[in-house]
Length: 228
Image 1: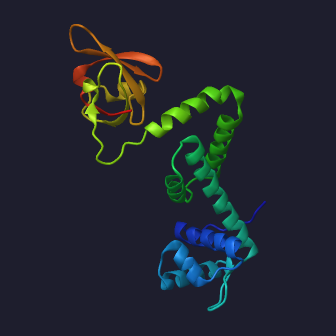
Image 2: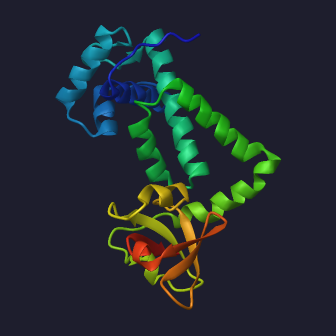
Image 3: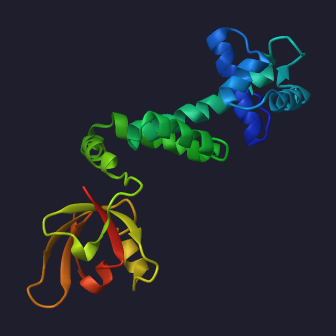
C-alpha cells in the first residue's frame, strides 16, 4: 500500500506540478514550476521549503527539485484523483477538455477515496456494460445541451411553445410546492418538452424524464428554461 502524506490543497498543486514536469522534462527547476502554476518565484520557494520539510521533495537552491519516494507516491495519488475526475467530466458529463480539467483541479483536493471509487465504478459501468447502451446514447445527446451561455436569452416555462424542448436553468424560490416539483424532476439541468395546453383554464402538460405532468401556468412562470 502506498505511503502518502496529507498536505494542503495548495501544496498538492505544487507536488502535482513537480511530478508532471519531471515526467515531461526529466527534471523540475523552480522557474518551470512558477511557469506551470503561473505564480511568482518567492511563492514557489516557500512551497518547496514546505514540501521539503515534510519529506516529500529534495530541494536546494539552484538545483533541480527531486521527489522523494513518499513524495512520488503522494503525487501519484493526487494525479490519479485528477485523472479519474477529468475523465468522468469529459467522458460521462461531456464537458470540454478545459472545463473538465479546471473542475477536476477544484474537486480533487476535497473528494474522499470512497466517493472516488464509486465514481470509477459508475463510469466503468456506463462505458462498458451492454445494458447501459441506452444511457450512453442519452448522455451523448443530452449533456451537450445543458450549457446555457452567459447572456443567452431565457424564457419562463409557461411561454415555451408547444412541441418545443428546453433545459431548466433556474427555479424561483417563491414557486409554490417547489419541493414537490423538484421531486418530479423540475430542477436546473433537466431536459423537458412542452406537450400542450388545456383548452380551458391554465393547465400545461409538460414531459419530464419520460413522464407527463400537469401544472398551472402560474407556477410554470417561476421556472426559467433555455431552448434546445
